[in-house]
Image (cartoon, rainbow, N blue to C red; front, side, top):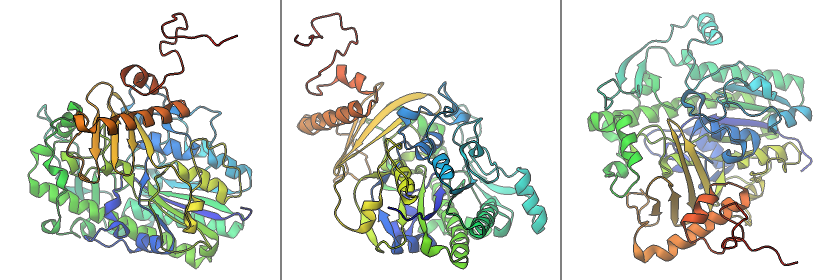
Length: 497
């Protein structure tokens, strides 16, 4: 592809796919994102490489799976892993800038601790942290310029921790007008940078990173009360018992205080979460309108996705964590490319990782350095494409180290938990992943097939998690010394001379 498109990358944080009308939501409207789906391509099996902010965002930046770039945990909960990407790591932004692109990022960065977006070639205000930095000097200047009131909240929603202390803040009412919200501020700064780039005339990449709808869901009256909690349908997985599941899941449920709050409060939380999504859709609409006004629409490819999903009560959990359920691994993914067909829907397994190669190809650049990424552009044509029949995801821990690997196929999901029980779900018969079938004798052929496939993919990638699988499971013929000793003829056969 020789044409060098402008690229607008719209990204949210902790965003469930089922909150968009394009993915079946009927609680609130998301007209802007639904229009993007209608005029572009909607991916129905779009997954995050890992359901944690920093590692997934580092994967987008580098085109590398988390095990490869090794930035495996958020700085705020770092458990001994790297805190920044190395100086010599490949990033798509540096390549774009070196090729003449203007590159901007406004909003959440969260790719490491010391190295900021500017270190990777991005223009834009430095907005560190995992939540809306409402004390940031640029935001406070924005409020002062508009004569808006400062940040203030009430109606806090939280449970009680196992030690008796107050639980994490999950939601609150914001006492500001919509025009004063941090989301409105971010959209305003994105539009300002877009105008600057349009005036320059060179192609641009512009990333708008909203901090929401990550909890706590802090929104003004208009969106806090947008959805009547009585109309909220609770997730079926709220019936989770954790029987036959890794014990860490029950512990995480206690950490997120689910059982200490009445069910009416859970309905309100879900309602406010949907209101938060609607507010972000409104602000994205301002960005899209500015793009139209500047005459950029016909030359600009537009992405929408997020770093990972959110439980919001599913499986009696909130936030994300060491449980590889669809709620946090399957996410929304939309892409509109000028000149490509409208209304395309794809069910291939694709990943946030695949955006990296796609961005490079849209810029007319070689995507091969994004080694774990594959361009999505062939899928936007609406034509058949040769694609992998499954996807592998990984997790390394958050509050503590916790390695997991997942293989998702058309029907089944396998999760390997070295410290605990493994998991196997039949997503055709149990889409809510309530029944762990791993130990059922009648599913031994399925379990064996999936273990061998996961092992093969991990070995081919160079993900050393496969070493554990070599010794623990029947994964087929092993053509290497699993002890790594090379000294025992029980495990090592020298090549014939």
